[in-house]
Image 1 (cartoon, rainbow, N blue to C red):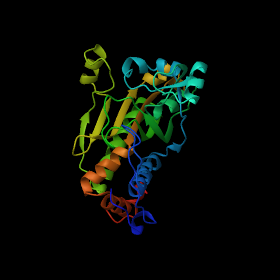
Image 2 (image 1 turned 135 degrees about the horizontal axis):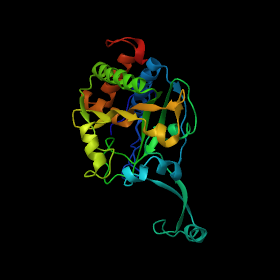
Image 3 (image 1 turned 90 degrees about the vertical axis):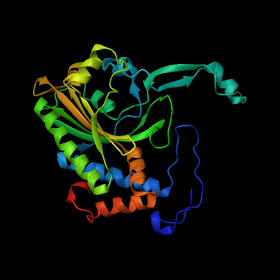
Length: 296
């Protein structure tokens, strides 16, 4: 990794930042600034839809996730939070290896998506006519392999979530699709748009067949096939499972998600270097590359 000059993000930075482990990265100053400024662009969708900013929880209760069929759909992704058992503490203090030490489950998992914590916080409530919120969270997934910024143990996910009527949920996704496509065009990131096939763990089951007939998730993919954003139609699933109502009726919901590190990857892929990618993002934020003021 070459040293960065003072003109990129501040003082010169010549250190080499190595991966602490598989699926773990430390972003250098240019990529870190690129991530921050990209997320500022993504909040343009929240501004466009009047979504209120909130901060989600760092852990999720397993009991709540079970209500949402998480362990039926995504048992392979879950990263559990645990405590070392008392008998392991002395061994660890004596310098024994961490691997193989006894742990005690806490009943909590690290989030694998930002929206779960937001939805769980609205359980057993009537939200009125509709509700829009946005949050960026650190998410974690126990993948079978890791690949640079394309697939990480932990990553940032910006979501814009709608709850209300079925028509409102559909409108949110239609507006989101236009926003993502226009933003990607201004950023110079070619996109493909396709149905996703990941919401179901059992790919041969009846729910997977329903997904194929009536997709509820679409992905935006970069030139190399990396999924960098998605629009997700939940129907009334979360409303039913969590007893969330809108003016007395079971709430429908939908959300738009941006994988922020994956956008960093896509920008570098499209522009050749982090410095060139950052220059393009700053031009877009400054209004020098088409569009209006919705994304800055």
